[in-house]
Length: 272
Length: 286
Picture (cartoon, chains in turn orange, yellow):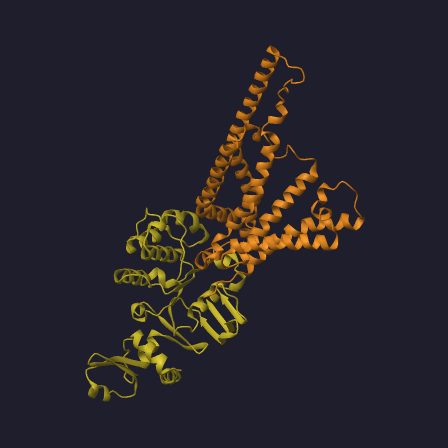
């Protein structure tokens, strides 16, 4: 099922074939990040406060991670390249494991690196500028104090360089972020394996359908979707059955999609 | 070795194979023939484990292909008619893929690329379709997997390239493996084939060596209709310009040449008669 040498061979072959595609994707993310950063810089460097950086980071992560995951098995949408991939001498588990590692470990690391390439200079400039503006305001106030118009002192904690775990409120936040990400990536990969033609569009429509069904179901049966979707942020105690069912569903949903990806690879056929 | 027992397979509601059986136990170049839609490409995909049989059993190199076990995959290589190569140079392809195939020969790969006149330092995306096909073929041939499946290998190749392919296939090192070639280019490959398989009506209509075919059938060209009329036990004939190509029963002791296109047409249009001759020869031999 898993042979270390064979797995390394597979990883090497996959990397040799796909690194260009991955690099272009990261370059696209970088370019988009630069464009957004320039746009934000023109509308005020306060947009690079720590909490804003956090928002950009997670929006980008949740947006690009499923797209990257959906592209991992891009070759499966083409009969000839799917054949080459399926005939590569490695087990289905090894092919699946490689996909899991690249998508859930390497991709977030690469994305974080690209994010910092754009964010770190912007955050540093915003920090320096906010500090200078505060100092200038304090100086002017000292020269000409106007009662009731005392400028705010510079608060460096608002302009710190964002770190992904900096805003987490305990382990629940980490679990929630991780599970959301696993769910989105697993779903995107599942779609890329199961839809033979235009998988991206079909997966997107399926995701919209799921969102609608979940929202509708929550509205019909509970009236409060936060009970399930907001389970990890809950502020009030839940019934025992909810405390069992909801976390189980949170873990089962991504697991089901990742398992479906494995089965999709195993059962994939190439028609003549 | 390839063994198929009572294979059943079809797409949706149209059955393609019913009770199909086949045994290839000896190394050699096997030509797989049949009319359009007879399921030749499908058979190759079934043997490669890329399609799953609906019934019966397939065994290739000691494995059930549908399980796609890594040990099986390292012993079987398939080049489909519509093939794909990653955007690499030949040397990069060898560096990243060859380790999957224990018998891969880098020397043979370089030699086959040279024979095919494929530029070694050019990426596949910069190559023409024919060059890519030759590169894919060179790699497949250099893997030396015990089983090699080729679907229409000469499609897209020019006349010179077809000769290059035949010259490689005729090499002794390629005679140590089972090479199953599905093709309509019968004339192109008759020189390299050791065995003919003909699929018709969802089953294997013919499985015979070239020697058996040559001993059972006589193929040639008659100068005119009068000469054609004098040929005994004529099975099939067709006009070629003012002459007539024909297939007849070989009653002499000499082994005649086998012309694949003629045989193909005779099998397609006079199947029962041709098979009856082959069966009687086989029975007499037994």
